[in-house]
Length: 242
Image (tube, rainbow, N blue to C red; front, side, top):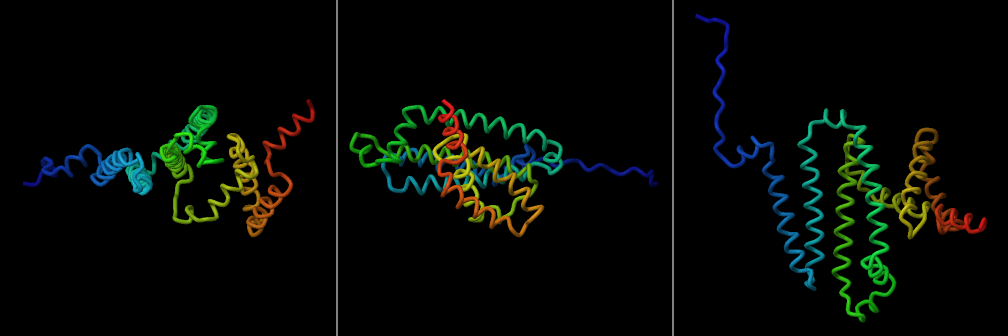
């Protein structure tokens, strides 16, 4: 006799490590990526004493770190991004302030002065007994971490990512941010990014076919008549008043 009730199947207990990890909401290949990052990080630290393969290990570690961030973001439901979109803006502003403070600390510290010396005269730094490899590897790793965090915050805000975001045009646009805001300054790229992106929002809506021409003209104008950027212009204006 059919009473209209369905039998509830008994849940099967996990039998493999992959099923046990899925019960804990941990993707198996994501865990593999994280273990690979940890192992290559140890190899990089071991080989940073002067081994010629240390730069290759560092590049592989950054690649795996980017894949791990993408895999972690893929585990989050899309509805969560839409609900938490306002919070991502607040987190982005907070992290920007923290990064500016970190940059200020590094620039004024002994580590930052050594990096400046390596930029200006690396051979003299080596003559004084410093190994530039350690400092280059440290600052490259830090920059890769900051780029990974920036990418992790960018994707949830725009809602989509595609290979076109990795084009050379975007890298050139970032260089223009720095040129417009002010080279060799911390707050200059932030100001430049705001000015260029506000202009981009206006031109891509009003005159979309002229945006690239305006961007090129802006870069040429800044290079010729405003080599120190907006920050340099502000410093000159304040100096003239005093």
